[in-house]
Amino acid sequence: MPTYNKLVRDKIPEIIEKTGKNFETRILKENEYIDSLKTKLQEELNEYLTAENDQEALEEMADMLELIHVLSEVHDGSMERVEEIRKEKVEKRGSFKERIFLLEVED
Image (cartoon, rainbow, N blue to C red; front, top):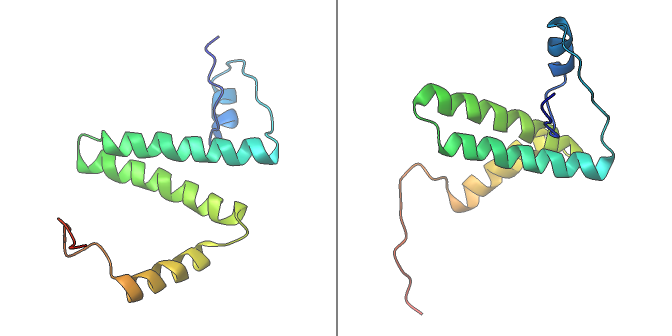
């Protein structure tokens, strides 16, 4: 039986169960959960970085967004609060849409 030792989406055990395969899961403690969310976010980021087309990139971004939703709650916030902070940063510092690449700044 392959070993995964990773955080999976909530319905994965149900999906595996429908195949008739045996599996084992456990519920993570809070600190393990946060660490696993961070690891999963890094995994999804790496998959985004190696995406070979727009559809794959969008799929990986959707996975990252789901993790950000969960992480916002873990950190006693919400997506609404994350969005407020994002908007504040755009107002103060701008976005990244203008493709500005800083080369150097005089000392």
